[in-house]
Every structure is written in structure tokens, then in C-alpha cells.
Image (cartoon, rainbow, N blue to C red):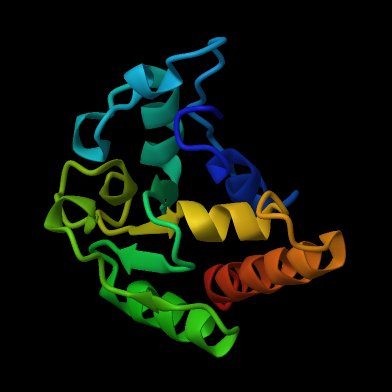
Length: 161
């Protein structure tokens, strides 16, 4: 949506046709950032209903910054590590969230409210979102290849079991 541009498209890529998907999107003509809710305060009933049924939850967020990076956090330490490794192996810069508020470690964070009580939060920089979606002026084929590599890395970890 328009709250953290590009995150809905990337979440759709990750979910594909076989994983559950919930989108909280801003659809106003402007000022969509006003709709932002911190992950530990998210309480939309339909979203919570879906999350409570899920064994694993991965949330896709946008972080500011022109550099190309994705920060991976959350309480599901095994998948956090696996996702960091898979993304690094696919050529993406990744590490732990620099800001503890973006770390996905609060038990009330929406990513940690599935059946397991431990999920994953992806914080994707604006620069990387723009590159993945071809909004940075790069050739379409380059953006498509980058986006495919990102999708494969994340889905590979999620579908590994």
C-alpha cells in the first residue's frame, strides 16, 4: 500500500499462490503515512484472526534509507538466521535491525502472535524496495532478476520444511 511503499508487492511475491497473505494497506489519496501502526500495537481483527491460525508469521515492513539492505529480526531465531544466510547467499546485504524498535522481538509484535509465538520481521530499505520493483531507474530485466532472487531466498527458507 501507500504506508510503506513496495511492501505489499513484495509480500505478494513471498506468499505466491500457496501461502496465506494479509495486507494492511493505505489507500488514501495522500497522507497514508498517518495510518502507520507500530507492529506491537497492531490490532485489526481480520489480521489477528488469520495470524492466530498461522504456525509461522513473516511480516514485511519498509525502513528508510537509500542503501540496499534488508534487516531480519524476530523471535524465531532459527528462521531469522536461515533468512539472513539465504539473503546473503543471494547477494543481499542483511543483518540484525540497528534499531531495537524494528527488531521484531516484542512478544506483542504481530510477527510473534501466531501459534508458535515466534515470527520473523523483514525491514526492507526504501532503496532496496525501489530496486526490487524497478523504481530506481534500472533496466526492467535487472529489477526482475533481483526481485526473483529475493523472492526465492525468502520462500526457500519458508518452504524448507
